[in-house]
Image 1: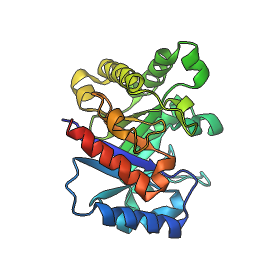
Image 2: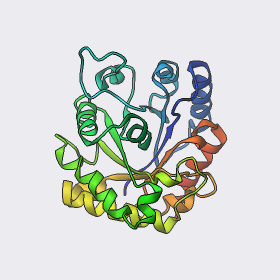
Image 3: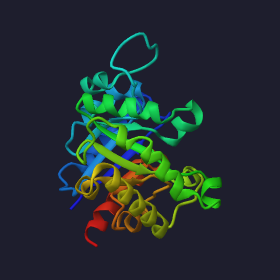
Image 4: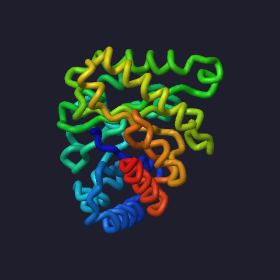
Length: 257
């Protein structure tokens, strides 16, 4: 049985002081619970060191929102996966829709970054998904297929241990809109079938696929309870301890059926 994963993407929010307070609050309220999944927080780079003491894996793990596609060199402003590993990071988000939209990152960038993440011994959370016009135009499945085919077969050492997929219905991020559980399940099942073609059936069966579109405490149980939905990549709701904990509780409840 796949363990769920609930990852909080703090985006451009929470400096070291506020991030430390939130992370320690989460860790204190989760400590002692026998969770049936994994919890990750992904602060901005400058907040990683402040959060690291609270996110050492019991029960919260540390993630980063991005990394460089190179291991070192004259790349001003970049941070390598190896540096992140040294800072205590275990997961790195790659390919988020905002990186695609605002920074024009493409498949080649994602392949380079994920390979660096794996070379550093870390786990990549690879994001993909369609925008509103693509869904309305009936192209959601084709878009997802193109995004997965453009990256997964080109990775050097991807497996179910070091790779997590995160389906993002971009039209549901920060809009208050949420894909129905049926839509989420359909797209996740479609993704898993594609992963089976690209990485092999055994890997695809063990691969965790997260839902990344406005997951909240009141819909987490139903979403994560779908057969192919293995958790959530959480944006705004991860910035409030009560909301994030409510989503974790929903994931735990989903494990009970």
